[in-house]
Amino acid sequence: MSKFISFITAGDPSLEKTREFIDVLAEYSDIIEIGIPFSDPIAEGEVIEAANIRALSNGTTTDKIFDMLKMVTFDRMVILTYANPVFVYGYERFFSRARECGIYGVVIPDLPFEEREEAAVYAKKYNIHLIRLIAPTSAERIQTLAKDATGFIYLVSSMGVTGIRSEFDKGLADIVRQIKEVTDIPVCIGFGISTPEQAKKMRRISDGIIVGSAFVKIIAEHGGESSPYIKKYIKEMCENV
Amino acid sequence: MNARFGEFGGQYVPEILMNAVIELENAYSRCKDDTGFNERLSELLRCYAGRPSLLYYAENMTADLGGAKIYLKREDLNHTGSHKINNVLGQAMIAKEMGKTRLIAETGAGQHGVATATAAALFKMDCEIFMGKEDTERQALNVRRMNLLGAKVHCVTSGTQTLKDAVNETMREWTRRVSDTHYVLGSVMGPHPFPTMVRDFQSVISREARQQILEIEGKLPRAVIACVGGGSNAIGAFYHFIEDAEVELIGCEAAGLGVETPQNAATIANGTTGIFHGMKSLFCQDEYGQITPVYSISAGLDYPGIGPEHARLHQTGRAKYAAVTDSQAVDAFEYLSRTEGIIPAVESAHAVAYAMGTAGGYKKDDIIIINLSGRGDKDVASIARYKGEDLYE
Image (cartoon, rainbow over all chains, first blue to last red; front, side, top):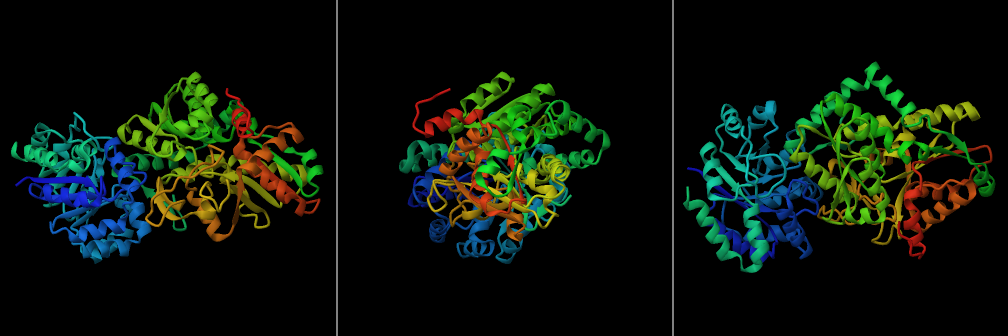
């Protein structure tokens, strides 16, 4: 069964609305990724970067996000944020609070395999998956990264930052094959997937897809009134499979 | 190669870039002890960049301040007008060695962008420079200079529209196109091996200065003073004096309107440990790890972090860091121009200002070396505006 992972930025346009959007997404998503905004999100394209800035400028903080997440009942919540907000909050404090909120996994794009240990010890202690990312450039690193990975593998679809695009790396199927030689956990592809056709194509070669910028774009356009648009979009993405 | 300076440093980059930084580390390891590479680099530094740079005895300033003998290490006399060329020539050679055909770089004041565009022209490589919108306005002449050298300049409109945002955009561009592109990081910051590699290329400053002062004076200086943004000219000026325990090493960071005001870029004074731009180091940030906007009159020091080796030198106490305000730097800019006939970059003027405040406290036979990291032509118009004149380039 192919997985659908949706992503939105916490606090855009407000945390109350984020909670509402989570309820809408939950109906169709296997996993929901929530972005803790960072002032300088270097792996994000313009769309998600702008959402980060909107969220921060309305006073969204890591503590307020945890308070909101504590109320969420959906049990497959993943946090995506950058190394600095986690490090400065304190690894132990961050992962223990995440545990209290029933968080399933954490994705930190600027914490590569070589540096993960400082966070991984606390992720393990609090039983949270520290999700590993694999990129089109990973080459001989692929199996090292995939081996012993837990939760799911986040396979980056193409070069560059997040954001809607028309082309994906041609070697993805081969990367998935290499990953599958060393692990049985799901491989989900993210970065740039926005249309049902793209979704179908990516689902054929992997275990699931991650859709982010497309939702964030809807929220940028419709703000607090986004729920029906989110619902319409996710329904279309999921029913066309 | 050690990726850390104590707890600081590391390689905190997205997986997309990991093979690129590993490839760079391997290429640098091959080159750094290679005789052929070092001979070619030395030759370029000599015949193209104009090294060794002079160590000039600032007699008028010394007499006026009435304390230590003041020497200026004249990095402003290098080709392109600053110390940045030292690093850029080395990195361009390594980029060639890796088979890259395109250079990208961030720039604050424009000095690093100009140096990178220069090297790209020399090595026949494509070049794109990322510069904050605010900086393209306060350093308009350098934008023209880069264009003239054949580089494309991207005006960065995100965030604070200054150096930090230029680094963000250059990193994003690198993730888009890494196979033929080398990111020429301009300071001793970013992921390993940049802090070590850039420091090695800049250490030519202290290698020369140490030898020059021993030849001229027969003894070591009491202090070496340099301005610090990311910290490349400072680490270059300090490096070969680190083992000389009797030599004080003093970095001058930008206090803007004052370290106690929100308008400053004094990372050592106000920063805490964090992870940003590929490194663990000190950053100006809030309790949630959000990077805070910083300010300085100097585009080159207007950065919310500092290189990891400086964070370590500060932690161990081997180097001292002082904060210098806009107004002190502007006074020093004018002072050095009038007193010695040398117009310093406003960045370097921070170091001059610190020396003006402290030279009188030294004995007459003590020696101070100020690293004059760049020339001030680029700042003439913005300083005039600071003084209330309506001057545009």
